[in-house]
Image 1: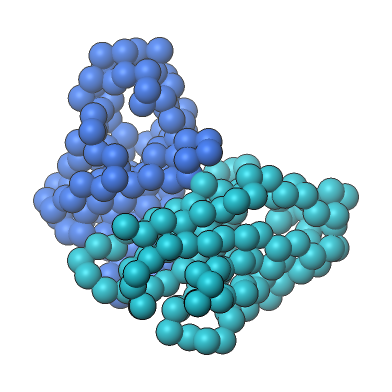
Image 2: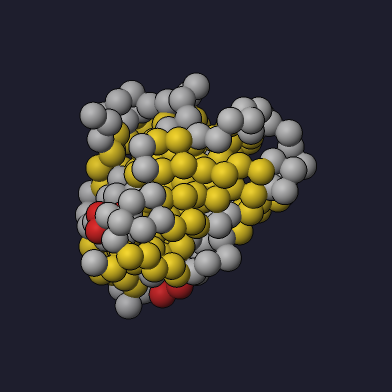
Length: 112
Length: 116
């Protein structure tokens, strides 16, 4: 079974803090994704990576950065958390040539 | 740019009945993929069904089937014999078949309640 894990299910941070969200997949997938999920807006792509050290901006990259130093790990970084970044964050991975994207369980981040 | 629209924020169905969730999309591409994902209260997104645009035959997975109307850009999901475990948020999604972009474009979701 493909497994995508995220470092935390729930996270509470203060405004201005630097926040790291970690995602790890165990199936050697080339492609990894970070989404943000908000009620009424569905899932919106923040960043994705198609190889180690490669990254591309998604639809809403502002206020976020990413890091992919190893194939299995894709980190989302909030340099200075703001209250409008309170949301559910979902990580996903997919192997090239496959249609199925596998999702992690999500991290519900609250910024106060 | 491609867009995906789910016009039903919430739906309800009686157990054992059939329900249809609507999805429309906008694209100028001829080759693409369409998906339905399910997100139960546990939050783990699961792929329910996939349709390739070049295939005329509607995809079916057990109790789940789609009605794919390419000309109308419509992609509805039918759930037959609904079960309590079908209660979840359902997302319709689009992905281009070509190009360097691998991303999925999601609709806003439909929350399905199943009444016992």
